[in-house]
Image (cartoon, rainbow, N blue to C red; front, side, top):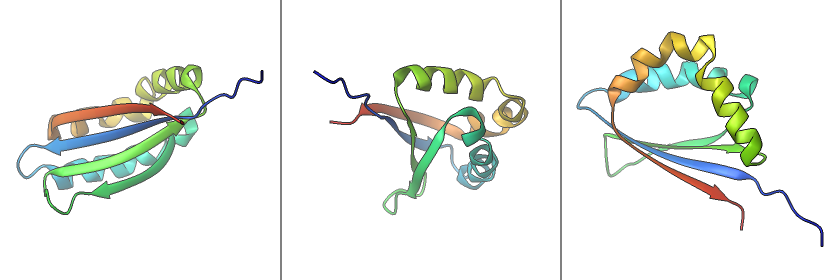
Length: 102
């Protein structure tokens, strides 16, 4: 039986401290520019029209092993380390759903 390697998707939901969403989005736009360089595929992003303090986005990876390597590379990159202190303090709550293709 042939074993199919399943794509891994991360659905990420962020809620922000009051008045911090715009600041987060400035940092996120910078972060998005170097995701692919480290093996992180940006899929899409959405704003919740019912919640001003919420931002939802998705990233993907070919498989779990690749995901682990990409995340390590991305979060230790000089680009991320330069902006992390601008981004993380804006987030009040973060939910992450790791999903594989059915």
